[in-house]
Length: 90
Image (cartoon, rainbow, N blue to C red; front, side):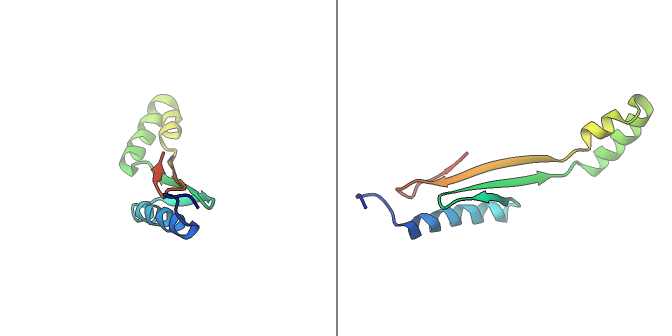
């Protein structure tokens, strides 16, 4: 191991600390490897906005806007740790 490099256990611990921080904020683990994790956060549409667009959609566009605005949105984050233990988030 070169100077500045961390052990596998130290890298895992650094990655787990960062992932735990995101999980506390409502993120879920989608995929993971030894040095990276893909997180996903699903947002449901605002229920009031959904109701209003449903009524307006039926009246104006035959329901098109209700379908377009009623979908859920997903956000993704990739967290990785390099050999020095530095955590990167994308």
